[in-house]
Length: 152
Length: 260
Image (cartoon, rainbow over all chains, first blue to last red; front, top):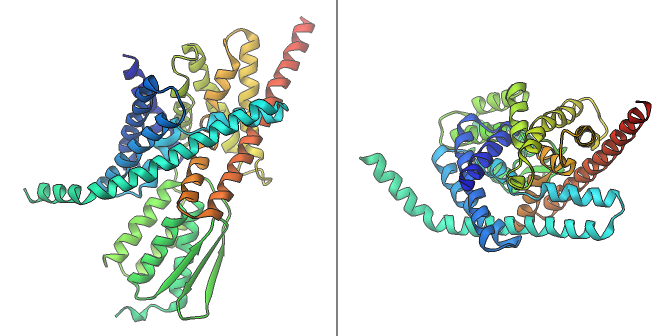
Protein backbone atom coordinates (compact mmCIF):
# COMPACT_ATOMS: atom_id res chain seq x y z
CA UNK A 1 0.00 0.00 0.00
CA UNK A 2 2.78 2.38 0.96
CA UNK A 3 4.65 1.48 -2.20
CA UNK A 4 1.56 2.23 -4.29
CA UNK A 5 1.32 5.73 -2.81
CA UNK A 6 5.03 6.30 -3.40
CA UNK A 7 4.58 5.12 -6.99
CA UNK A 8 1.66 7.48 -7.69
CA UNK A 9 3.21 10.54 -6.06
CA UNK A 10 6.55 10.10 -7.84
CA UNK A 11 4.74 9.57 -11.15
CA UNK A 12 2.85 12.84 -10.68
CA UNK A 13 6.05 14.59 -9.62
CA UNK A 14 7.87 13.46 -12.75
CA UNK A 15 5.03 14.45 -15.08
CA UNK A 16 4.82 17.81 -13.30
CA UNK A 17 8.50 18.52 -13.83
CA UNK A 18 8.05 17.44 -17.43
CA UNK A 19 5.43 20.17 -17.81
CA UNK A 20 7.71 22.77 -16.18
CA UNK A 21 10.69 21.91 -18.42
CA UNK A 22 8.60 21.66 -21.61
CA UNK A 23 9.19 18.09 -22.69
CA UNK A 24 7.40 17.00 -25.87
CA UNK A 25 3.97 15.59 -25.09
CA UNK A 26 4.69 12.11 -26.40
CA UNK A 27 7.47 11.60 -23.86
CA UNK A 28 5.44 12.56 -20.76
CA UNK A 29 4.14 9.04 -20.15
CA UNK A 30 7.43 7.11 -20.60
CA UNK A 31 9.22 9.70 -18.47
CA UNK A 32 6.57 9.35 -15.77
CA UNK A 33 6.86 5.57 -15.73
CA UNK A 34 10.67 5.71 -15.66
CA UNK A 35 10.64 8.23 -12.82
CA UNK A 36 8.16 6.33 -10.70
CA UNK A 37 9.87 2.96 -11.14
CA UNK A 38 13.22 4.53 -10.27
CA UNK A 39 11.71 6.04 -7.14
CA UNK A 40 10.25 2.68 -6.09
CA UNK A 41 13.67 1.08 -6.63
CA UNK A 42 15.18 3.83 -4.46
CA UNK A 43 12.53 3.25 -1.80
CA UNK A 44 13.01 -0.52 -1.74
CA UNK A 45 16.80 -0.30 -1.51
CA UNK A 46 16.45 2.30 1.23
CA UNK A 47 14.61 -0.26 3.38
CA UNK A 48 17.66 -2.54 3.26
CA UNK A 49 20.52 -0.05 3.14
CA UNK A 50 19.99 3.17 5.02
CA UNK A 51 22.78 5.07 3.28
CA UNK A 52 22.97 7.70 0.58
CA UNK A 53 25.04 6.04 -2.11
CA UNK A 54 23.44 2.64 -2.80
CA UNK A 55 19.77 3.74 -3.13
CA UNK A 56 20.63 6.63 -5.43
CA UNK A 57 23.02 4.51 -7.45
CA UNK A 58 20.33 1.83 -8.00
CA UNK A 59 17.73 4.43 -8.96
CA UNK A 60 20.13 6.00 -11.47
CA UNK A 61 20.75 2.61 -13.07
CA UNK A 62 16.99 2.08 -13.42
CA UNK A 63 16.55 5.54 -15.00
CA UNK A 64 19.54 5.01 -17.26
CA UNK A 65 18.37 1.69 -18.69
CA UNK A 66 14.63 2.47 -18.92
CA UNK A 67 15.38 5.97 -20.22
CA UNK A 68 17.60 4.69 -23.01
CA UNK A 69 15.04 2.04 -23.98
CA UNK A 70 12.15 4.51 -24.10
CA UNK A 71 14.33 7.04 -25.94
CA UNK A 72 14.85 4.36 -28.59
CA UNK A 73 11.17 3.38 -28.74
CA UNK A 74 9.74 6.91 -28.79
CA UNK A 75 12.58 8.48 -30.81
CA UNK A 76 13.46 11.28 -28.39
CA UNK A 77 16.88 12.40 -27.13
CA UNK A 78 17.62 10.52 -23.94
CA UNK A 79 18.12 13.70 -21.90
CA UNK A 80 14.39 14.39 -22.31
CA UNK A 81 13.61 11.28 -20.28
CA UNK A 82 16.46 11.82 -17.79
CA UNK A 83 15.66 15.38 -16.69
CA UNK A 84 12.06 14.89 -15.48
CA UNK A 85 12.71 11.42 -14.02
CA UNK A 86 15.51 12.76 -11.88
CA UNK A 87 13.44 15.37 -10.08
CA UNK A 88 12.46 13.31 -7.03
CA UNK A 89 15.97 11.92 -6.53
CA UNK A 90 18.24 14.93 -7.01
CA UNK A 91 19.77 16.69 -4.02
CA UNK A 92 17.97 20.00 -4.66
CA UNK A 93 16.37 20.17 -1.25
CA UNK A 94 19.64 19.32 0.52
CA UNK A 95 21.49 21.91 -1.56
CA UNK A 96 18.95 24.51 -0.42
CA UNK A 97 19.24 23.43 3.23
CA UNK A 98 23.02 23.70 2.95
CA UNK A 99 22.92 27.17 1.48
CA UNK A 100 20.39 28.23 4.12
CA UNK A 101 22.70 27.06 6.90
CA UNK A 102 25.43 29.01 5.11
CA UNK A 103 23.26 32.14 5.15
CA UNK A 104 22.57 31.63 8.84
CA UNK A 105 26.29 31.14 9.56
CA UNK A 106 26.01 27.53 10.73
CA UNK A 107 29.28 26.08 9.45
CA UNK A 108 28.96 22.52 10.76
CA UNK A 109 25.60 21.85 9.14
CA UNK A 110 26.60 23.64 5.93
CA UNK A 111 29.49 21.25 5.53
CA UNK A 112 27.33 18.23 6.32
CA UNK A 113 24.55 19.15 3.87
CA UNK A 114 26.97 20.10 1.10
CA UNK A 115 28.83 16.84 1.53
CA UNK A 116 25.54 14.91 1.32
CA UNK A 117 24.50 16.80 -1.82
CA UNK A 118 27.87 16.05 -3.42
CA UNK A 119 27.61 12.36 -2.51
CA UNK A 120 24.12 12.03 -4.01
CA UNK A 121 25.04 13.87 -7.21
CA UNK A 122 28.12 11.73 -7.75
CA UNK A 123 26.22 8.50 -6.96
CA UNK A 124 23.58 9.44 -9.55
CA UNK A 125 26.17 10.41 -12.19
CA UNK A 126 28.15 7.20 -11.73
CA UNK A 127 24.89 5.22 -11.85
CA UNK A 128 24.17 6.73 -15.27
CA UNK A 129 27.58 5.76 -16.58
CA UNK A 130 27.12 2.16 -15.41
CA UNK A 131 23.59 2.07 -16.88
CA UNK A 132 24.87 3.26 -20.25
CA UNK A 133 27.54 0.58 -20.29
CA UNK A 134 24.87 -2.07 -19.56
CA UNK A 135 22.53 -0.57 -22.16
CA UNK A 136 25.06 -0.68 -24.98
CA UNK A 137 25.52 -4.38 -24.20
CA UNK A 138 21.80 -5.16 -24.51
CA UNK A 139 21.07 -2.74 -27.38
CA UNK A 140 21.78 -5.21 -30.24
CA UNK A 141 19.46 -7.77 -28.62
CA UNK A 142 16.72 -5.15 -28.33
CA UNK A 143 17.11 -4.03 -31.94
CA UNK A 144 16.91 -7.66 -33.10
CA UNK A 145 13.75 -8.20 -31.07
CA UNK A 146 12.18 -5.05 -32.49
CA UNK A 147 12.97 -6.04 -36.07
CA UNK A 148 11.44 -9.46 -35.57
CA UNK A 149 8.32 -7.85 -34.17
CA UNK A 150 7.95 -5.52 -37.14
CA UNK A 151 8.45 -8.42 -39.57
CA UNK A 152 5.54 -10.35 -38.08
CA UNK B 1 25.64 16.66 -55.44
CA UNK B 2 25.45 18.59 -52.22
CA UNK B 3 28.31 20.90 -53.15
CA UNK B 4 25.66 23.53 -53.89
CA UNK B 5 25.62 24.24 -50.15
CA UNK B 6 28.09 27.03 -49.49
CA UNK B 7 30.49 26.70 -46.62
CA UNK B 8 29.40 29.98 -45.02
CA UNK B 9 25.76 29.04 -45.06
CA UNK B 10 26.44 25.66 -43.51
CA UNK B 11 28.55 27.12 -40.73
CA UNK B 12 25.89 29.74 -39.99
CA UNK B 13 23.15 27.13 -39.74
CA UNK B 14 25.33 24.87 -37.60
CA UNK B 15 26.08 27.75 -35.24
CA UNK B 16 22.39 28.46 -34.88
CA UNK B 17 21.62 24.80 -34.21
CA UNK B 18 24.30 24.69 -31.53
CA UNK B 19 23.09 27.86 -29.87
CA UNK B 20 19.47 26.70 -29.68
CA UNK B 21 20.53 23.33 -28.26
CA UNK B 22 22.83 24.86 -25.64
CA UNK B 23 20.33 27.45 -24.40
CA UNK B 24 17.56 24.84 -24.21
CA UNK B 25 19.51 22.63 -21.82
CA UNK B 26 21.10 19.89 -23.96
CA UNK B 27 24.39 18.32 -22.86
CA UNK B 28 27.57 19.59 -24.49
CA UNK B 29 28.46 16.24 -26.03
CA UNK B 30 25.06 16.07 -27.71
CA UNK B 31 25.47 19.60 -29.10
CA UNK B 32 28.86 18.76 -30.61
CA UNK B 33 27.56 15.45 -31.91
CA UNK B 34 24.50 16.93 -33.62
CA UNK B 35 26.42 19.76 -35.29
CA UNK B 36 29.14 17.43 -36.62
CA UNK B 37 26.46 15.00 -37.78
CA UNK B 38 24.75 17.70 -39.85
CA UNK B 39 28.10 18.78 -41.28
CA UNK B 40 29.01 15.26 -42.35
CA UNK B 41 25.61 14.82 -43.98
CA UNK B 42 26.30 17.95 -46.04
CA UNK B 43 29.70 16.53 -47.10
CA UNK B 44 31.79 18.98 -45.15
CA UNK B 45 34.31 18.06 -42.48
CA UNK B 46 32.85 20.20 -39.72
CA UNK B 47 34.40 20.45 -36.27
CA UNK B 48 32.46 21.80 -33.35
CA UNK B 49 33.68 22.64 -29.89
CA UNK B 50 31.06 23.58 -27.34
CA UNK B 51 31.41 24.85 -23.83
CA UNK B 52 28.49 26.17 -21.89
CA UNK B 53 29.36 29.81 -22.62
CA UNK B 54 30.69 29.66 -26.18
CA UNK B 55 30.43 27.56 -29.29
CA UNK B 56 32.99 27.25 -32.09
CA UNK B 57 32.11 25.86 -35.49
CA UNK B 58 34.69 25.48 -38.26
CA UNK B 59 35.54 23.46 -41.34
CA UNK B 60 38.72 21.42 -41.06
CA UNK B 61 41.64 22.51 -43.31
CA UNK B 62 40.16 26.02 -43.48
CA UNK B 63 41.00 29.10 -41.50
CA UNK B 64 37.46 30.30 -40.95
CA UNK B 65 35.84 29.68 -37.58
CA UNK B 66 32.45 30.83 -36.42
CA UNK B 67 32.16 31.85 -32.77
CA UNK B 68 28.77 31.97 -31.08
CA UNK B 69 28.35 33.41 -27.63
CA UNK B 70 25.82 31.64 -25.43
CA UNK B 71 24.14 32.51 -22.17
CA UNK B 72 22.94 29.90 -19.72
CA UNK B 73 19.26 29.31 -20.28
CA UNK B 74 16.34 27.49 -18.76
CA UNK B 75 15.22 24.03 -19.78
CA UNK B 76 13.12 23.92 -22.94
CA UNK B 77 13.42 20.28 -23.88
CA UNK B 78 10.84 20.42 -26.66
CA UNK B 79 13.24 22.56 -28.73
CA UNK B 80 16.00 19.99 -28.22
CA UNK B 81 13.63 17.31 -29.46
CA UNK B 82 12.55 19.30 -32.55
CA UNK B 83 16.11 20.09 -33.57
CA UNK B 84 16.99 16.44 -33.09
CA UNK B 85 14.11 15.32 -35.31
CA UNK B 86 15.08 17.86 -37.99
CA UNK B 87 18.74 16.88 -38.03
CA UNK B 88 17.78 13.21 -38.24
CA UNK B 89 15.50 13.94 -41.22
CA UNK B 90 18.29 15.93 -42.92
CA UNK B 91 20.85 13.18 -42.41
CA UNK B 92 18.57 10.49 -43.83
CA UNK B 93 17.86 12.76 -46.80
CA UNK B 94 14.15 13.35 -46.18
CA UNK B 95 14.57 17.13 -46.34
CA UNK B 96 17.15 19.23 -48.21
CA UNK B 97 19.40 21.94 -46.86
CA UNK B 98 17.12 24.89 -47.66
CA UNK B 99 14.25 23.28 -45.84
CA UNK B 100 16.50 22.56 -42.85
CA UNK B 101 17.56 26.19 -42.77
CA UNK B 102 13.97 27.39 -42.89
CA UNK B 103 12.76 25.08 -40.11
CA UNK B 104 15.74 25.91 -37.89
CA UNK B 105 14.88 29.59 -38.20
CA UNK B 106 11.27 28.82 -37.37
CA UNK B 107 12.24 26.78 -34.30
CA UNK B 108 14.53 29.58 -33.15
CA UNK B 109 11.76 32.19 -33.28
CA UNK B 110 8.86 30.02 -32.17
CA UNK B 111 7.90 30.09 -28.51
CA UNK B 112 7.27 26.42 -27.81
CA UNK B 113 5.65 26.13 -24.46
CA UNK B 114 2.92 24.50 -22.49
CA UNK B 115 0.13 26.86 -21.51
CA UNK B 116 0.36 28.68 -18.16
CA UNK B 117 -2.35 26.62 -16.42
CA UNK B 118 -0.54 23.43 -17.46
CA UNK B 119 2.80 24.71 -16.19
CA UNK B 120 1.29 25.90 -12.91
CA UNK B 121 -0.36 22.51 -12.44
CA UNK B 122 2.99 20.87 -13.18
CA UNK B 123 4.82 23.02 -10.64
CA UNK B 124 2.14 22.22 -8.08
CA UNK B 125 2.58 18.49 -8.67
CA UNK B 126 6.36 18.78 -8.28
CA UNK B 127 5.81 20.63 -5.01
CA UNK B 128 4.54 17.45 -3.33
CA UNK B 129 7.92 15.82 -2.86
CA UNK B 130 8.04 12.00 -2.63
CA UNK B 131 11.09 12.50 -0.37
CA UNK B 132 8.80 13.79 2.39
CA UNK B 133 5.97 11.25 2.12
CA UNK B 134 5.28 9.69 5.55
CA UNK B 135 7.74 12.18 7.07
CA UNK B 136 5.66 15.33 6.81
CA UNK B 137 1.96 15.36 7.69
CA UNK B 138 -0.53 15.05 4.81
CA UNK B 139 -1.99 18.50 5.49
CA UNK B 140 1.51 20.01 5.23
CA UNK B 141 2.02 18.33 1.87
CA UNK B 142 -1.37 19.63 0.74
CA UNK B 143 -0.36 23.16 1.74
CA UNK B 144 2.97 22.73 -0.06
CA UNK B 145 0.95 22.01 -3.24
CA UNK B 146 -0.43 25.58 -3.11
CA UNK B 147 2.63 27.33 -1.67
CA UNK B 148 4.65 25.77 -4.50
CA UNK B 149 2.36 27.40 -7.07
CA UNK B 150 3.03 30.87 -5.64
CA UNK B 151 6.76 30.27 -5.40
CA UNK B 152 6.97 29.04 -8.98
CA UNK B 153 4.83 31.91 -10.26
CA UNK B 154 6.98 34.51 -8.46
CA UNK B 155 10.16 33.08 -9.98
CA UNK B 156 8.76 32.48 -13.47
CA UNK B 157 6.98 35.82 -13.83
CA UNK B 158 9.89 37.87 -12.51
CA UNK B 159 12.65 36.20 -14.53
CA UNK B 160 11.91 37.91 -17.90
CA UNK B 161 11.44 41.28 -16.18
CA UNK B 162 14.45 41.37 -13.87
CA UNK B 163 17.74 41.58 -15.73
CA UNK B 164 19.99 41.06 -12.71
CA UNK B 165 20.92 37.38 -12.62
CA UNK B 166 19.96 35.14 -9.68
CA UNK B 167 17.31 37.54 -8.35
CA UNK B 168 14.22 35.68 -9.57
CA UNK B 169 14.94 32.32 -7.88
CA UNK B 170 15.61 34.29 -4.70
CA UNK B 171 12.24 35.96 -5.11
CA UNK B 172 10.62 32.54 -5.46
CA UNK B 173 12.35 31.43 -2.25
CA UNK B 174 11.21 34.62 -0.52
CA UNK B 175 7.55 33.96 -1.39
CA UNK B 176 7.75 30.31 -0.30
CA UNK B 177 9.50 31.17 2.98
CA UNK B 178 7.09 33.99 3.75
CA UNK B 179 3.95 31.93 3.08
CA UNK B 180 5.19 28.85 4.93
CA UNK B 181 6.24 30.78 8.02
CA UNK B 182 2.98 32.72 7.95
CA UNK B 183 0.92 29.50 7.74
CA UNK B 184 2.84 28.09 10.68
CA UNK B 185 2.35 31.13 12.89
CA UNK B 186 -1.36 31.12 11.99
CA UNK B 187 -1.44 27.59 13.36
CA UNK B 188 -2.59 26.04 10.05
CA UNK B 189 0.66 24.25 9.23
CA UNK B 190 2.52 21.98 11.64
CA UNK B 191 6.06 22.29 10.28
CA UNK B 192 7.12 25.22 8.11
CA UNK B 193 10.47 23.59 7.31
CA UNK B 194 8.82 20.61 5.61
CA UNK B 195 6.53 22.87 3.57
CA UNK B 196 9.48 24.99 2.46
CA UNK B 197 11.62 22.05 1.30
CA UNK B 198 8.67 20.46 -0.48
CA UNK B 199 7.39 23.63 -2.15
CA UNK B 200 10.88 24.61 -3.33
CA UNK B 201 11.19 21.44 -5.44
CA UNK B 202 10.34 23.18 -8.78
CA UNK B 203 12.88 25.94 -8.07
CA UNK B 204 15.97 24.24 -6.64
CA UNK B 205 18.73 23.35 -9.13
CA UNK B 206 18.97 19.67 -8.22
CA UNK B 207 18.75 18.42 -11.80
CA UNK B 208 21.33 21.01 -12.87
CA UNK B 209 23.86 19.81 -10.29
CA UNK B 210 23.36 16.16 -11.28
CA UNK B 211 23.79 17.04 -14.96
CA UNK B 212 26.93 18.99 -14.12
CA UNK B 213 28.48 15.90 -12.58
CA UNK B 214 27.44 13.86 -15.59
CA UNK B 215 29.30 16.37 -17.78
CA UNK B 216 32.39 16.25 -15.57
CA UNK B 217 32.45 12.45 -15.79
CA UNK B 218 32.00 12.85 -19.56
CA UNK B 219 35.24 14.93 -19.57
CA UNK B 220 33.44 18.18 -20.39
CA UNK B 221 35.08 19.70 -17.35
CA UNK B 222 34.53 23.37 -18.20
CA UNK B 223 30.80 23.01 -18.84
CA UNK B 224 30.39 20.82 -15.78
CA UNK B 225 32.11 23.27 -13.46
CA UNK B 226 30.21 26.25 -14.88
CA UNK B 227 26.91 24.45 -14.37
CA UNK B 228 27.85 23.38 -10.83
CA UNK B 229 28.82 26.90 -9.76
CA UNK B 230 25.66 28.29 -11.34
CA UNK B 231 23.55 25.73 -9.45
CA UNK B 232 25.31 26.55 -6.19
CA UNK B 233 24.67 30.28 -6.53
CA UNK B 234 21.01 29.69 -7.46
CA UNK B 235 20.65 27.53 -4.33
CA UNK B 236 22.32 30.27 -2.29
CA UNK B 237 19.97 32.88 -3.66
CA UNK B 238 16.97 30.67 -2.83
CA UNK B 239 18.32 30.04 0.67
CA UNK B 240 18.81 33.74 1.32
CA UNK B 241 15.33 34.45 -0.06
CA UNK B 242 13.73 31.92 2.28
CA UNK B 243 15.58 33.27 5.32
CA UNK B 244 14.53 36.85 4.55
CA UNK B 245 10.94 35.80 3.79
CA UNK B 246 10.55 33.72 6.92
CA UNK B 247 11.98 36.37 9.25
CA UNK B 248 9.91 39.12 7.62
CA UNK B 249 6.80 37.01 8.14
CA UNK B 250 7.82 36.56 11.79
CA UNK B 251 8.22 40.33 12.26
CA UNK B 252 4.88 41.12 10.61
CA UNK B 253 3.08 38.49 12.65
CA UNK B 254 4.69 39.83 15.81
CA UNK B 255 3.54 43.39 15.01
CA UNK B 256 -0.02 42.28 14.26
CA UNK B 257 -0.05 40.14 17.38
CA UNK B 258 1.13 43.12 19.42
CA UNK B 259 -1.58 45.36 17.99
CA UNK B 260 -4.37 42.93 18.76
